[in-house]
Amino acid sequence: MSGSVSIEVSPPPLGLEAEYETLFTPDSLLFLHELISTFDEEVDQVLCLRVSRKAHFDLSGDLPRFLEETTHIRADRTWRVLPVPPRLQKRHVDIGDLAPCDTQRFIQALKSPAQGIQVDFDDGNCPTFHNQIRGIYNVMKAVHGHFPNVPHISQTPVLMVRPRAWNMVENNLMVEGKQAPGPLFDFGLVMFHCGKMLYENKSGPFLYLSKVESHLEARLWNKIFVWTQQKLGLPLGSIKATVLIESVVAAFEMDEILYELRDHSAGLNCGMWDYSASFVNKFGHRWTFLLPDRTRYINMEKHFLHSYMNLLVQTCHQRGALATAGMAALLLPHEPHSDSYRTAVATVSRLKLLEIRAGVDGFLVFDLGLIEPMQKLFELHTEGDNQLCQLRHDVSVTAEDLVTMPPGGVNLHSLKYNIAVGVLFVNAWLSGHGLFFYKGNVEDSATAEISRSHVWQWIRHQARLQDDSRVVSRRLVTDLTEEVMVELSVLCHSVRDKQRLHTAADIFLEVVQKRDFPEFITTYLSQNHTFLSSQRTVDLHQHRSNL
Image 1 (cartoon, helix red, strand yellow):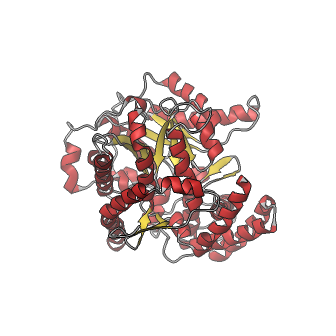
Image 2 (image 1 turned 120 degrees about the vertical axis):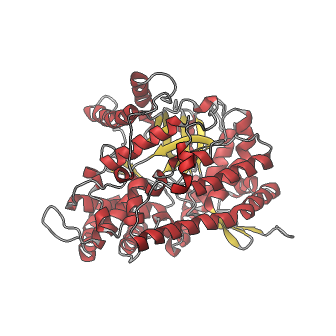
């Protein structure tokens, strides 16, 4: 665009020329320009505040605390968030990690009996330009009823769009000479093309907000919502957002986050892996925060995670907000009448029943086969659409409860498992995919974060393996990576597959050997030359597979 408006968009991915032209109209580009130029400086400010807070923790040795300057917000028991619209009153089961660029799975989800769909541009998505264009275009098709044999948007599960987090940029859009913030690209295009239609059909616009670390970040999102609603002619409070509490520092500001978003809140969500990884992100260089093996010692029954979940439920319900829990990542076996299938459902049911009894109003599943069993679990153990009446007056969580690490150790199996997950995640991104399946589970950026965090921290603190007392060192991790590569090579079906897997292993070893812990593996990869250059090859392959 010319004149006083400076906005540059990369050329369309091969095979998506029509979708590109539909999304990037003169009006939508003008809207994106206004949105991004209005808030770009404040985005930089909240990212600088993250760096400043981390530096304070490092220099002072302090730990997070409940903020003195916002005591009045926590102490005032009278304020509440605005009630959510009818379609959000019942949040029992959402489908998680659903990247809308996966057209077939997206259509299956739209036809499913789930309450909602996490339309994911974040953890379950690889943000190639192809995937962003295809994904946003598919959302537009769903909202405007352009998918054949799919129910009307007022009858499908509600679309809970999850834009990228603040740490991500859109490499293919420049506004006033700067790369655009990834979340504003995703949010802006979806809102411009779908916001009014969703509102008119009483089906949105609804969002998940990832990796919000403070009430100041929530305040920024609230400003963005108010501005967007005014621009698009939507009533104040039309947008509703569920904030994912994925960082330990955010756990100390849950009241404040709800307060900042009180006109636009759809509640808070507690997950496990990003939240656990945030301890390494913030305090991983401290021996006292050494995280033990996640497969044996990290689950929602452990004190620090159970305290976090209880506090989240109590905080939400006392403010009239819904509280939801994380995603069941287990994949069901193909044969529904087998013992292994029944065992898998029973395993998920046991873990999710713990969350239901804590008072959560819903959670996510990846496998569509788990939707109905989990809905029945809610019907058996709760009454009504939600558990807002469960105010959890029995809960009293201290700052110490939230930062007490579980006891436990490290073994060879867990080290190799984390290496495999880390390598396969990088490999998935180099292939243009945001997730992959491994040993009966879906793995995404959240599990990749905890896996690579473990390995980095175990090297840093020279943890000893419980099996044979070997020290976890760079040499040991490099040797074990070579062993893991032999096991993973069976997944390769061509020379190119093998080359990509070896490149992924090299990048993974770079990440876990860094002197300073890379804050997010997704940021690291999205700025990596190998990933950026691989997008052209991936786009060509995706184009050919669609012919």
